[in-house]
Length: 229
Image (cartoon, rainbow, N blue to C red):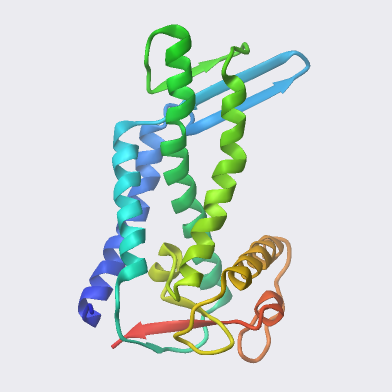
């Protein structure tokens, strides 16, 4: 079991690690990370890319995520989190999971392109179709499925995502602050939360006296602000 000081240092390190991905993604992407394709009126664009540094960042990020699923620590409620804190936590989770999956998933179209041309490059782009492009289209639903699972899995173990950990948030089920969700309940919770976060971009969501949003009430959950003691 980690001590509070160690957990707070880990939170700072995790926040720095996620923030580091922003300049890395910008400087090393060569225009695209993962796979991108667009076709209209007979004209199109196909591109894919990754980078060894981004792959290393992704592997270490997966290690961080798996560690958070296993770590034990004493924590206590510290009040009701603000809507902005919850929203930022969601953005962190979106970017964190997307960059990992795009960096790793981009290897597939790069490998297919290497088989076609006989030359491997960490990035390619072209304005014409080629055999093997259809494999890249499978990356989109696979990436979305893994991002969804990234949000579901911690709930089934009574743990936090990286975004929740950094923002000191914990989603608790109706039957206790230490309980874990069933897989079915976790899936429903995440699905409604995604819709809820999306709607909050358009308008301010009403919250009750306990700070619960409509999707909190619908799934009978509570989001707590926590501290380590």
